[in-house]
Length: 112
Image (tube, rainbow, N blue to C red):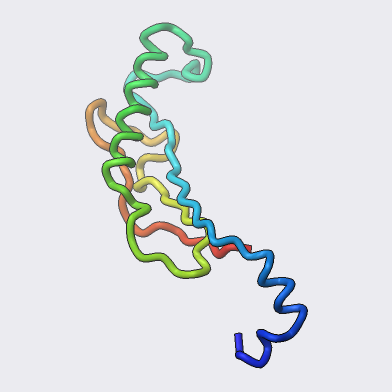
C-alpha cells in the first residue's frame, strides 16, 4: 500500500480488521486397508476399530514428525493446507505397515 493511502480513513478501518494468526491445517485421510469390504463404515468390531485407530495414530505421528508448519511463510498466508501424498486418499490401496504420510508442497490460502 502506498504511504499516501495509509492515511486514508477507510484504509485505517480495514487495517483494524486484520488478523496476524496463521493456521496450518494438516489433512489426515483414512486409507483403504487390506481386506476391507463395503461394510467398513459400519465395522465397529474391536478388531476393526483397533485397526483404524492404529492406522490413524501412525499417520498422525508421521505428520507431527514432518513438522510441515515450520518454515518461511508469506504475510498473506493466513491458512496453509498440508495435503497427504497421492495414494493416501480414501479408496487408495496401501499395505499395512507402509507409510502413507505427507510430502510435497503445501497449498497456501491467503487470509480474507
